[in-house]
Length: 114
Image 1 (tube, one colour):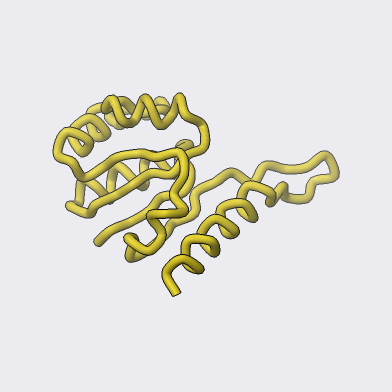
Image 2 (cartoon, one colour):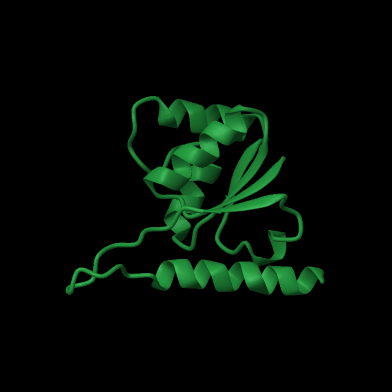
């Protein structure tokens, strides 16, 4: 399966690396270019026991890579997983701007398909 994982924080990096280790072709989409650079070099952008080795192995096996813009990859993917943060606002409500941005990016990619 070809999978886009939007967001390379703790949830996204672990999800992307585990799915790649299971044999899927995975592309992590992350606007933070330092995270993209780290993952592309085979290093986890987050600290989690064993994750750096898993990322390294899956990058070396060409099953995991990262990009900073995934819109053009939406038609390529069988599925997109959104793993972006939804931190709390000062009033306790959820900040959904990252989620809305990814949804708009996916919609843009779908428009190119149809």
